[in-house]
Amino acid sequence: MALAVTAEPGGDVTVLHLAGELDLATADQVDEAVRRQLDAGRPRLLAHLAGLDFCDSSGLAAFVRASRRCADAGGWLRLAGQHGRVARVLALTGLDEMLGDPADDGAAPRPTT
Image (cartoon, rainbow, N blue to C red; front, side, top):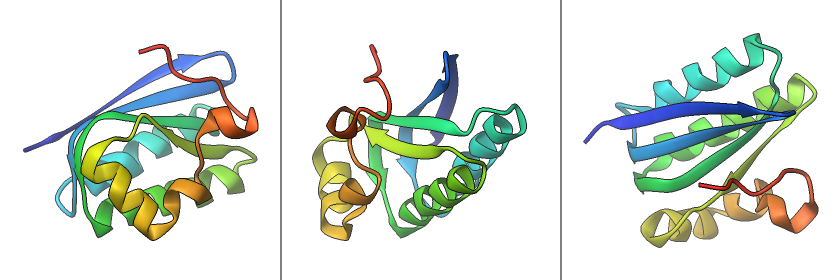
């Protein structure tokens, strides 16, 4: 299955909607989407994962790279909307804490979709 990444700029936070499977074959799409947002001067990103059905270690690494790149640009990456297996993998690795729910710290609004 493929991965779809769509960007929804709004205010000072851009929501990246991920749908499908995030793995070795598709992780570069996350890297590219983040690069495009940073190039456009949008370093505050909320990755909305409600449509994400699968995430392996390559996907986890893509989130860590994205977080570092956003921080280097003066922003951040937060994850929201994860469920099922994806939520479990994020919890087991601690990325759910590291990239936390934006509602927990007030850093970013919750997506409306």
